[in-house]
Amino acid sequence: MTKQTKINNIKQKSKPFLSIVTPVYNEGDNFPALYETVKKNIKIPHKLIVVYDFDEDNTLPVARRYQKKDASIILYKNTKGKGVLNALLAGFDYVKDGPVLVIMGDLSDDLKNNGTPYCQNSLCL
Image (tube, rainbow, N blue to C red; front, side, top):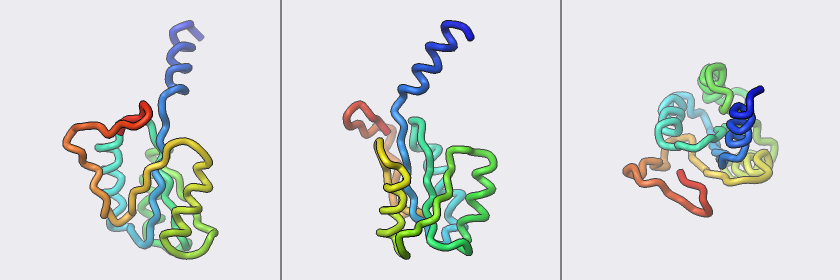
């Protein structure tokens, strides 16, 4: 390993990393647009944590297809009880630390910021 490769690896590990917690309930039709919106608008390294309540959720087959191409997608089953609040709590428990962004699976959140990054404590989206 060259000195430059070691430096690049250190820089990569020190970049801010964002966890995006996304509760879903039968969002199979919305998932492709959700994924594209995240990829287009979130410019820092991130992982997309898709939190679902039940194995029959129609989001899962679609999300799994995307997951095969993108390892940043994590499917996480909510075991805290049904509903969006419990899904969020389960997602926060999964993340443990670091910055978290909540994006609803139904695309009710607008991630467009007209090209102006939102920054707080040296983390910019």
